[in-house]
Length: 69
Length: 134
Image (cartoon, rainbow over all chains, first blue to last red; front, top):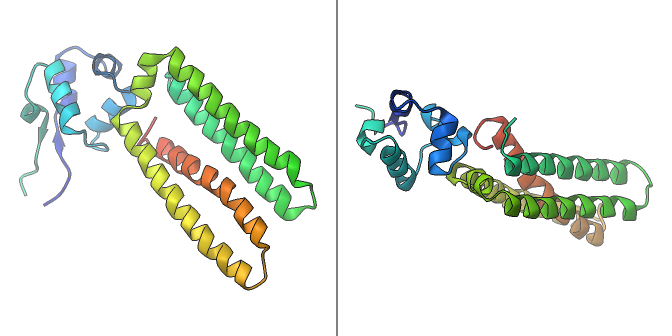
């Protein structure tokens, strides 16, 4: 199984009307971290994934999904 | 370039330490220059970097939190692991050189310091350049 995640963070962030910098400031990480998560370069910890979900008022499953195969 | 002051200091501090160390290695390897000024330059650059980092981290706590978030901590840990392997590799090469009488044991030990300082900084800057750290 591929270790790549399907990431829907950008869609939820833009729907919430937040820039990468605003979301980063809200949860205390760098803008680059948000950027790398959205691009699939960096996989966040469970804690950070939960913080993102809480800030965007959705579940972690809405933000990240495993690939089918 | 990031607007985070802590990240900026970390990046430019790493660049400074790398440039000064590489310059010192080149000059001391290729010329008969006395080692004291060059070693002093490495020490001053490293301590200056540490001091400025300390002050900036205290001065900007929010920026410090973002600059040391989990992505940057992961890159930092990877750079320290790289430093370990670089030092181990250097040790084996230097050991062979000492046993073959190609290098003085004191000098071999001396260069371990710059290698230990240089390798992690170089690895972290590579992570920044690859977009895996800020």
